[in-house]
Length: 401
Image 1 (spheres, rainbow, N blue to C red):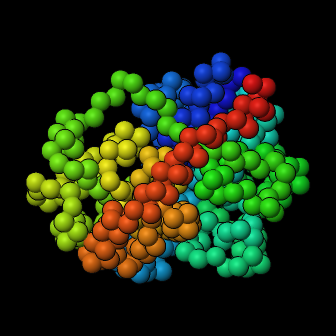
Image 2: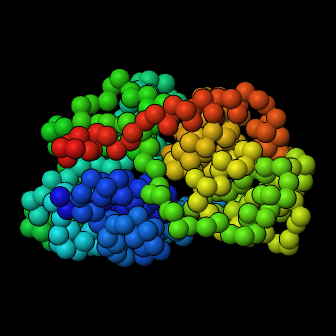
Image 3: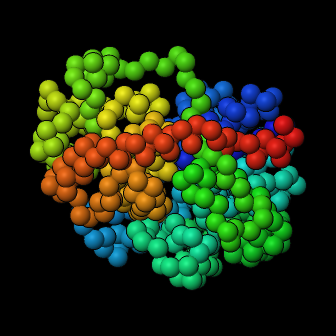
């Protein structure tokens, strides 16, 4: 079968999809991944065909700096740029699908891919990294809430968010017009998908998020989708040398949300009196701190004592898979949810909201995550559980494997 994955977004959206694609390829399917140009190498390294989506979401990954309130005008500009990005992604999705496919898998920010599938007469399914279904078990991911609103509040808020406007609404409407489809709002289309049991496959561990009781039929979550193996990849020599020069360091990185204050991080590490590997550029060089660029988490994380991160879905999964505890600094959307889950599962201290990040709060969190044995014990237990899961199994079953 020719399978097309639609993955607008950042690196964290593309890596799990490419890993799932590699798994599907191992069972004889042809897999193409539509993503932005900066992630072409990730797709091709997984053995999948790359189909380009115009645009680049990296500069949109963090709508508001952690230390300031976003002025209304700035947020309006951000939302306009996000709508423009979605419009480009929708155009690229149509072109990618017209290049040939038998099944379209769309991530959670690409509902226009379902309209494209309808217009071409091919089946589609969801391929989500976050739980988007309204549920009593969690608040809406898009609101970036750090706490549950309670069962009724969670469901009501989730339903309200689903019914409200979204940046991809104009893109969905335009695609339907361009393909000669009957006029239908994105919200009406989502209600139709719910009514017909449209399948959604989640790259989420049931150990981390047990399947909510109020999920409808057709929603599955059997485990994470891990990055494709890269036997030819080699770590930077400077990183290997740094790791061998002393005890396991702490990893500090904030993914697509970008580096926080570099001086703050250096001060916090010095106060914690530990070694650290920091993802991002720092001013100056240090004997006990190494700054690095992108490095495979599946290689690095098992070699560190703890990870400090933004609690993005992919980084959260990688840390738990490695069996290392985590201190989290969530910024927005689903990050507060995953940060809270790490703490509730006992694999790390309470999250630090990004707006409350200081050298003192970070140093305290680093010390806690390294020195409290229970955090490591729980992380290692969760790693064993994750190792027994197969996130691709439900989709493989649908494909008759």
